Length: 139
Image (cartoon, rainbow, N blue to C red; front, side, top):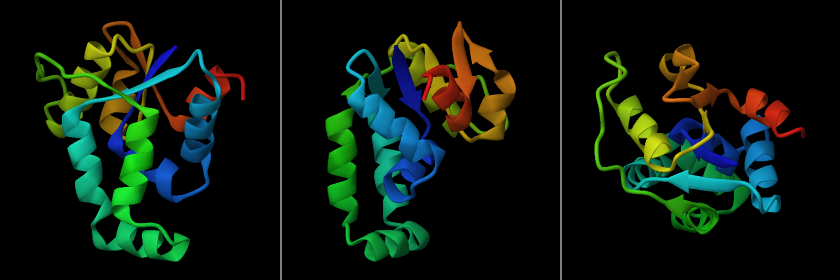
């Protein structure tokens, strides 16, 4: 199975212990599941990690942004989308998530974003919440 995590899910998985964390840990343990991201999504994650709220959380858990980002990079395979089609008119950043999923030939795109979740699928890629992804993986 091939999965792309939206930045909001990756951030939650790296900093808190809810459904996104369980999902990321499941992906890491199961060799038949591959996790993908793109340079744009990694850049966005890096930018978000240094904002005040994530920085406070990192301080509480005793980690630095660069360490957390490096751990995530170790868990993902990188794809570079050739095209970023306009799909979500209300938020063009979401188009980069879709482009990464298409480039990765993903089975699942996991997001907490209402615009993406509202699509339910794109080019046969299912768009699901972290809780839905956990259920699909049988966790």
